[in-house]
Image (tube, rainbow, N blue to C red; front, side, top):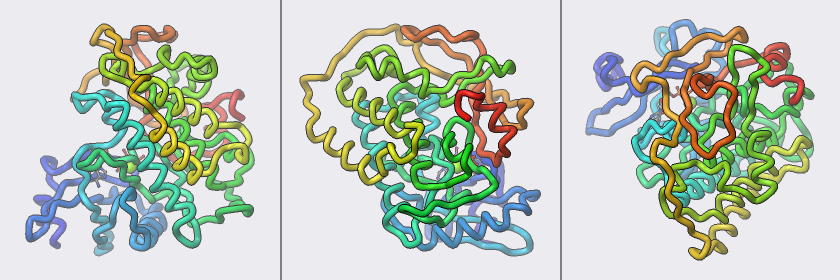
Length: 366
Ligand SMILES: Nc1ncnc2c1ncn2[C@@H]1O[C@H](COP(=O)(O)OP(=O)(O)OP(=O)(O)O)[C@@H](O)[C@H]1O
Ligand SMILES: [Mg+2]
């Protein structure tokens, strides 16, 4: 099989990551074409349908801000997807400070805008419209020109866009990014993607995890509620990613992104903007932004999130069955967290039932 040859028989050296579906390998096809090869876990039989969904959908959908599917094979029980290779990691890597560089304010806006364009295409550019259902930083890959490429259509459901909404008894998505309105009503609409996108906008501004939870559920924190007071009072500097305070930063633009993030996460889905409106607003904000608002402040350079141990980030299974990854936080100028030395940050997409959701999100959201 050519994919086996391309990846040195799926060798560890070629592995670039791993997710709920399986491992991802960097492969070189004949002719030197570099691709990303996603191989399903052996035990992912229940995901056969997801696999076919992803293949069917991706092969139809083409957009500069959507990850391109090169091919697939489904032989001898081996499910393999071949994608274009995206060289600059995922947005999650930057939020965690894993790439050794932080994004500029302009790169953040461009990534938000590109991602919004890709999602708009899913919602409005194809028939029937597609709701992603698992938007999160690890599913926004960063291309050579630092453009956003939306990936992972495994949980995508072709769905109604517009007035009708889809009702499903199985909640799918990732805690922290899941729309509470969808969780409580089971009505899936494109506004659920808008909610997840709002969370991502706030993460682009603050570089904070979407959710922090200790082993004790009372230590729950969600980025929307954490960011809200500062954004509403226009004090964006209080919650800004400290890396942005060490370089020229357009504070006005970051505040606009924060405000947009809050609107995207409005409790009532219909009060949220559509993805197309989000594109327009971001474009307009970029056009009208002036360098007069650029500020530069000095902060101690150790202000960032980073994994507890870069090479061997510890993962554990929480009581909710959700894989979590521990991080420690060195923050300055941020409100103190209850236990700043050890916080948990979700890394895994999962299917959840309502009981699990309640445990994770707490009564505040349901
Ligand atoms: N096309 C690609 N090019 C380069 N790297 C990729 C590509 N697709 C995925 N990756 C990398 O592989 C890793 C695993 O991706 P994968 O989508 O399997 O899992 P995930 O998004 O982290 O989690 P989940 O399974 O919950 O969506 C990611 O960290 C991503 O950076
Ligand atoms: Mg992914």
